[in-house]
Length: 440
Image (cartoon, rainbow, N blue to C red; front, top):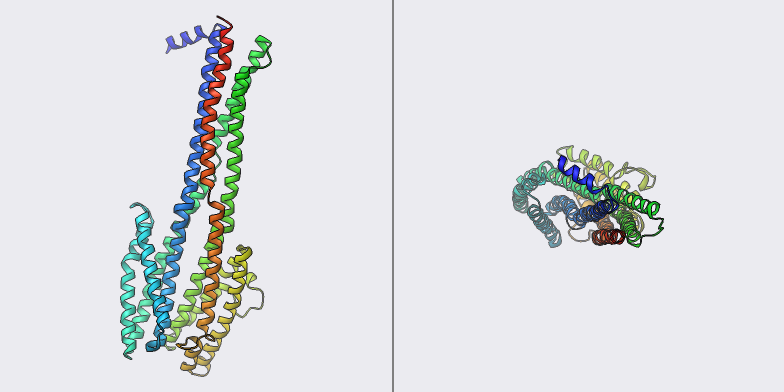
């Protein structure tokens, strides 16, 4: 070590030695600046890629699994109430929901690692979905034959859905949403290391040029000026790319991903409320459990259903979605709010027929119909769900429009930074080489 220090001190005692050392330092700094900037931008680009092609789709699919399961349970209960008069489209919707949930569960399991916390939720969903389907089929078969045991099978199936499948789906949704938040944070992180090294590199270039000016009385060194310009260009490109992509990603989250989560929550709340409404009729008033669940769920969805204040001010998941969703999605949500209020009025009429008038068939006819169901609570609920689905599609499109291309912009800036770093090193060495030539 002493020998190295001695040789270094000997080399820097002369002007040519100091120039050579300055050349080495500047070359190392400029190349390191380009390399570090490129690496940090590439890391952000990879995170942005994950947001667009991995974590957001997985988060969306997890929400869709949750929604499909809730819709399957709701549709199965509606079909049960209609018994032998169950329309083909109701049965087809139930089967489509199960197929969609099974498909998405399989896809999510294939895309997650064995150590992912999502695997436990996916395993439970994969194991219990066939059990639920089997119970529904038993309930359906008994119900068509007029066997009272069918109602017990359906209630047990619904209990499995509410206590096992839906909680597992909600847990999966939470895990995937957390991963999406982590990827967003990584994609929008500030590359402080690159900025610090840019300042050090520019300071070193400035110091060398000032020293040369004092010793040679020459104002400009084209090589060092070129190196300074290259580092400045890389720094500006880094800043601009960081600001623009960060803004686009923030917009995709604020205008797309966040409202979409609120919409998905509102859709699941509406579906589970509708399930409780149907199960209350399946139970024929033998328990107050489902009526209480319905009341709690509708309050969680949109506050007090008897309130006269605007939906967006009532509180609840639907109200939150209306606050968060702008533009065309807001128009769809206004439609959903109107349909929701209609659903509540029809449900109240059905409840009055069953509870106050002891007219079970009348309540059933006000809730579902195998022929003309346009005036039933089921029709109003379906209108609510369609409007929520339309709003969700709009928010998904807004997310994709804002987030697509951010990874490419970051990679372009990374490539430019690497090239500018090498260019700056070459320019600095060339500029100092001309000064060295004067000593020969």
